[in-house]
Amino acid sequence: MGLISLAIRGIIAGVQALSEDDNKTQQRRPYSEGIYVPPAPTPQFEVLASHETNWNGKGVAGWVIKVKGPILVPRPMYVEFVSLVLDVTDDSEGEAVFCLIPQLQHHEHNFFQSVRMGPLVSPDQGFRDWVEIGFAPSDFLVFPKSGGRRLKFIAYMCEKSPPESRSPLCVATQVIYHNVEKTGYKEIHQKRIESLRGAILLAFAMAKSDGSVDFREVDVMRGWCARKAQEFPDELQFQVLMEIDGFVTHCHNPSQQFRQQPTDNVHSVADSIRRSDSPNAAEEALELCVMVMSADGIISPAEISLIDRVASSLGLPPSMLSLMRDKHVPVHGETSLTDEQLLGVDSIYNREELRSRLLELFKTYNSRLQIERDPNKRARNQRMLDAIGRVRSRCI
Image 1 (cartoon, rainbow, N blue to C red):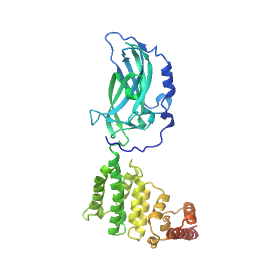
Image 2: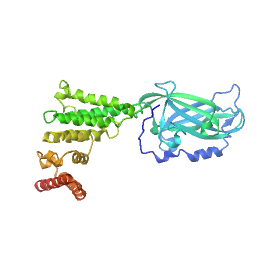
Image 3: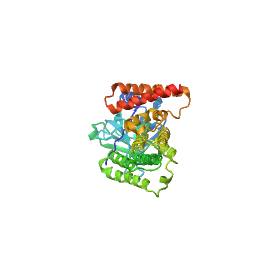
């Protein structure tokens, strides 16, 4: 099974070491009040997984896994309880549910597995009441897909032994239904492709904003597609390239409705990218738009107006747009712009807001000028500082 890379950060510190104190207490406690000699007929070993929003008062949501019933052993022994979760929605054999907490992973893989020490038990003993033997924190589980899923919880007991030597003595399962809101690991690639297609739509809106689509703008898009395809796993790169490069061809077709009214859906497309689960989707969409804007060497006021709308709809700050322009726009490409358009402050009418933004821009370009050695970049930084001075003298 090919595993995808799961780059999710910010593990809650209190969940990293799951209840070590509780485990030590369990190891010391004889469980005498919970152990019983089962009457005939022998009851069944059972598992119960129930979702809690504040496990043990720690503010952590997840499934508490409990067992009860006989834990039959051939002789007195110390036991361990192991619990697993599988997704059986699309495959009756079960698909892995991964966990982002190392202490709750299988010893050889990163799928969820909880191991708890049990008591010393003797033949024909068991638990009269439900006893917690595991916890699965829902915020740190990664499922195959989102939506309604059938989850199979498995609990088994074995003699205390090294992980590779565990042999179940009794097993119980329970299937529950759960709605998964987060993107599944099988959906991540498709979500990423969708965000790339959205970026291409915005890029064509940018290309059309000055009246026509230049072949150099299309070439920039195709080069960007090739680079983005290389970020996928090797076995998917060709397929992804064919899909997103083909989408460029589709959008460039004069018969497509989008080509006739390219800016109508800018806000809705950008908003969908902003809400995407794909990492950095908004930033890479804005960067492509800036690259397309500067592809023909001339930036028009219409393009400046549209790029400001795109950045705003993507939820990105003006500083991010300035960074992209500094990276991709040549000095000579902005000669047709006013100082306000060049600085991206043409839509700011409040004097105090304008003063604050000009001060921020001055600090940025002045610091860059002090350390930059490239003549072209130094010239751009100086041009920006000159524009700041002129706008300040006129408006403040």
